[in-house]
Amino acid sequence: MYISLVLQPISLSLDVSKAERAILMLVPLLSLAIELLNTVIENAVDRVSLDIHVPAKNAKNMGSAVRFVGLVMIGVAWGGLVEG
Image (cartoon, rainbow, N blue to C red; front, top):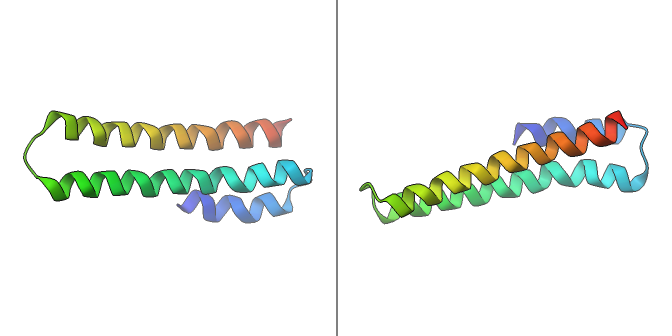
């Protein structure tokens, strides 16, 4: 979440095209959406049962993996557009 708050103003100050600026602004928002969905998954799994349940644990792990992919997307987009 904090990444979005930091990157949004920075994207406005960079000398890039409108399309590149849109990408720089949307990728952190997409990552924020992923984080919200991950939180929903974790809360739903915890709400159903606190017992150890392998499929529920896998769902939580996959949600965390998707969050990591979102962070990688930010790095690739920003690294490619700012560097290039």
